[in-house]
Amino acid sequence: MSMHEIKLPIIDLSDYLFSDSPDRKADVIAQVRDACKQFGFFQLKGHGIPLTLQHELLKSLDTLFKMPAEEKLKLSYLENPCRRGYEASGMSMRDGDPLPDSKEAYYIGREDPVVELSGFYGPNLWPNLPENEFRGPVWEYYQQTSKLGRCIWEVLLQGLGYSTDVMETFARRPLVQMKLIRYPPPKSTLPGQFGVGAHNDFGGVTVLLQQPGKEGLEVWLEDRQAWLSIPAQEDVFVINCGDMIMKWSGGRYKSVKHRVINKSDAERLSCATFWHGDVFATNPLNPDDESKETVGQLLVKRFRNQMSLPKEGLAQVGMA
Ligand SMILES: O=C(O)CCC(=O)C(=O)O
Ligand SMILES: [Fe+2]
Image (tube, rainbow, N blue to C red; front, side, top):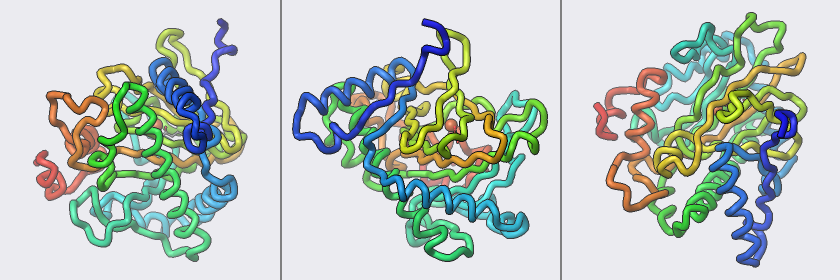
């Protein structure tokens, strides 16, 4: 098979969500399992998230990122105890990257009434925009993609022969982080600068919405030693597994390296919802796993420097 014939499968979730037939559900579970074993990624339709909501969400991103730079900087995520808020272009860089990412981003998470576990459970930082232009659609979309992320976890569990019962403890108060992203047009990025440099997602399931027609995401194919471009199709989400899933599944599900190079001639918007699990939960993909590492501990290991997590939060998950 030549490179241009390789495509991520497009899986239709509607049989899993709405069919009464166990065979049809089992078929979806098998398709997801095979895609996550082979690519660590797949595309998803029939997910039940209304197209109108996806459009409203993208409009909210546009409104947010068009705010004056000085207003956005007042909302810096580094000043927020739960790391919610704004990250300017040029703030993220991974070891070995020649230049920082060109993207700007905004982080939303669980809406807990008070900062209870610094860095994890607490309220969001909402920009001063009319409810119907930002918070309304963004929060509705957060809840719907959270539900979808949980559903994909259930499918992944069944793909390895486990019952979905473990989700009850795993999803008690799940950490679900959402990242609203804007990639500037190529003419305003430096030569050799990526939108997001090559990385693996850290945690659980990622649910990604790309602005339709704005390609940019590339996924690494280890066996070909080549990058595969992922189309940005309307109403089709991209789903992938993070490192925690790869570790917890004993490598049966892959976490695969990916990067973003904005290939349109204008800006590109996207939104990623990362569904990790309850901060104190242990491995649901193998409930007999000897390692009792929690979601919170794994998260902190990876992000303590990058997110400069507060000390109290580290202590509360046993990582001070
Ligand atoms: O914007 C995209 O298409 C992907 C973003 C991504 O990989 C990430 O934020 O982890
Ligand atoms: Fe990613």
